[in-house]
Length: 280
Image (tube, rainbow, N blue to C red; front, side, top):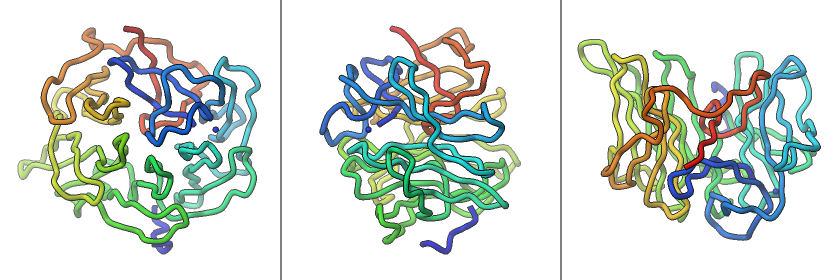
C-alpha cells in the first residue's frame, strides 16, 4: 500500500440539520462526530497566511492560533483521530501527495500512504482516503488502510472514463461509508452522485445525484450524529438527504452560499474545501 505515491477533533457535523463547527477533546464517544456542545478543545484548519498552505490549531473561540506544520510543501485536509491524540493530513510537493500522521501538538510527522482526504474510522483503527488527481479527467479511487499503514483495501472508483470516487466519510457506527462518485455518459457528459455503501465497498446505494449541465455538482458528504441523514453541497448550497436516499431538500434555497467567507482563505479542514456555518 505504501507504493501508491501518486497521489483533541475537528469535524463538520449535522445536528438537527444545522451545520456546525465542533472541537476536539470533548468526549470519549466512538462516533466520528463530536457532541454539539463541546466542553473544550481545539479546531484544526488550513491557512496560506504565510505563503503556503499549512495546518494550524486554535481554541474554539478563535484564540491562540498555533502553526503545526512547516516547510515548503502544502499541508491540508487535517483530520483529528477520534481520541484527539493524532492528526492525519495531506502533504503535497514535487508532484506527489501523501497522507501524514502527526501528534496533536505537531510533533513526529511521518508518511503513512500516498493519498489525500483522510477520514478516520470511529474506532480510530482505519483511515479512508482518496488516491488520484482531482482534475475532471483524472482517475481517483477510495481506499481504506489501517492506522499503521498496513492492510490497504480498495473501496470504490474505476478506470476513467467510467467512474471516479473521492471524499469518503464514515458513518457514526463505522459500518458504512458515504463518498462522492463521478460517472461519465457515453455522449461525453458526466454526473456526480453521493453514494452510501458498506465499509468494505459492497451494497452501494445512490442517495443524491446531479448532472453538471447547470454549473454544479454534488460533493462533500457528511453524516448526522445519529447516522440517519447526510448533508452535501449541491449547486452551491447545502442540502440534506436521508441515508436511505429519501427526503432530499436544500437547507439554503437561495442558490447562494450563506454565512461569511474568510478573506484570508483560511479553510477548516473537512472533506469540503471550504466550510460554511449555518443557523437554523
